[in-house]
Picture 1 (cartoon, protein in one colour):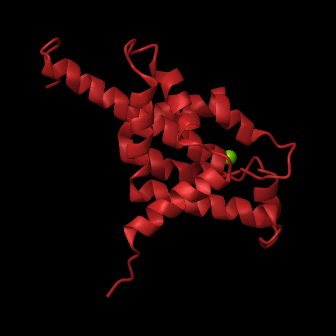
Picture 2 (cartoon, helix red, strand yellow; picture 1 turned 45 degrees about the vertical axis):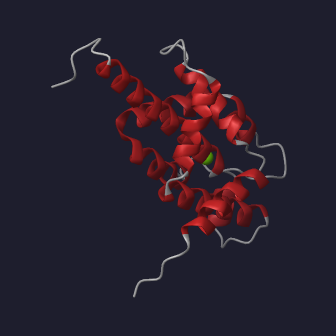
Length: 176
Ligand code: MG
């Protein structure tokens, strides 16, 4: 039989590790709100936070959080083997596995998520910018992308849901 973990345990760990690294779900919801408020005037912060919580409930997302934070921590402690240690420690330009891991989050939510992810990576709003700051002792090579991906996915969920709302109200004909 294949080994499988208690899903509550994984979900709790993902939330806990994120908090221990100084990231609050509210910080992620802030990015989602910034990204989507121009499109949906009535969008509230609470809706964005609820969307972030939904994204966080996915096992794929929890797995990416645990894997990324673990690698960041090992890099901080200098425990990785060379040359991976130097690549992650210094967030080396040609090392792109942090973005690829984050894409496993975005992939769950389709192509709008991908566009938003690229946009956040360029803009580095709020908490993403703080995580990207290389001056402190903490290494967030993986976490900045993961946080961006969660915010992008939460945005994408909102976009899909708002579109459904509009269609259900009969304001525009549904897409063929
Ligand atoms: Mg990164």
